[in-house]
Length: 75
Image (cartoon, rainbow, N blue to C red; front, side):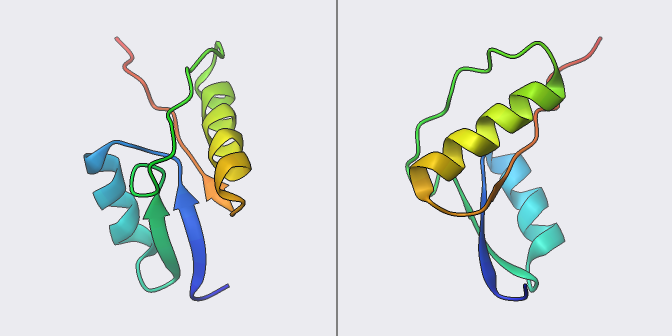
């Protein structure tokens, strides 16, 4: 929904810039870091699991719709 506020569950400034660039004009984007939400421990065994964990954590604490990623480092 155009103009809807969307929380991005990240504290990473680089990721925040990328997501703002992708979604700006479509959603009001705010990050978990900007809302001073705590970062959860990424305890899942997959990128998908950790992304779900982070999005649910931010949604529970903010009461808003959240998205997250968990790209990690793959070698």
